[in-house]
Length: 89
Length: 220
Image (cartoon, rainbow over all chains, first blue to last red; front, side, top):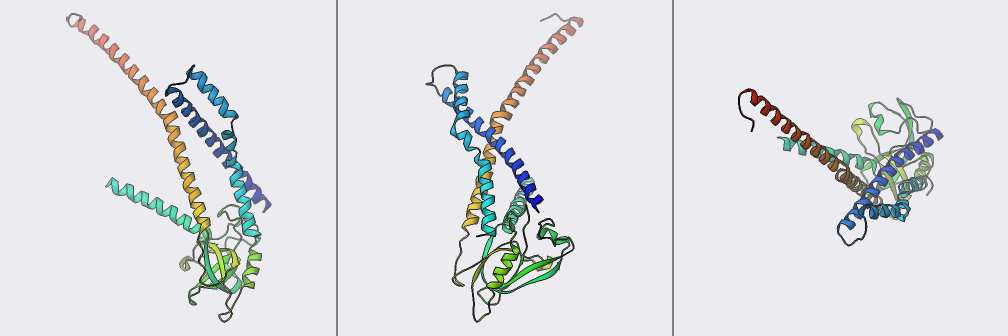
């Protein structure tokens, strides 16, 4: 039985890691596209590549990227809450 | 013709998803418990509608199984329902239920007769289908005020909203991937092909012109 729960945890972590990677790629892609669009709309001084590189650097250190960790947090919290609600509430 | 096949396929997929959700999502019945008991239940081709064998309760086999049951009657006084009460195991459906003994004790505690009714809401999932001997699985029993209590399925609303959001996000991600990765790649390939084609045209032109010199035509 314990093995079953360990197996569930392992499989969940694998699936959530895949989701985390996909969401990271998506989020980065959306940010880069927006930077490109902002620059191409005009009004930004300097080199296009430099502007995008700096914007991406800001993204890598920003809050939005850290929020992707919620991909792990929310499902595990929901699972724990379900266990509590079904078995103890 | 193709239109019919396409729509038939879409409707079939939609119906499958809807049935799957209807089976898996929790529902609540306001009922009276009239009996709780164990019974050895044969399990054959309908194994899919029972708990998997490795749930850990200990008695799960693939041929017969000692299963707890809860009989109830609806407020109309005639419609009955039989729930099974099994642990759900470690994976699907994700109720993570392993308190079926406790649930059975609670249900027994709420057992009533017609003269002294006690009303409970039984949370359950699954279907009752006599023809293949399957029973919905009870998950929770809580007392309610009376037979006229209306319970709104908030949880299902939340779950369906989250599912719709996930589908929407997946669709957005696929769209973004196509727009940023596949379309530019296809464009690059198309440009390369065009260039190759043009060079080939040019080469063929030179070759034909060279051949023509052998036929006594002057070079243009």
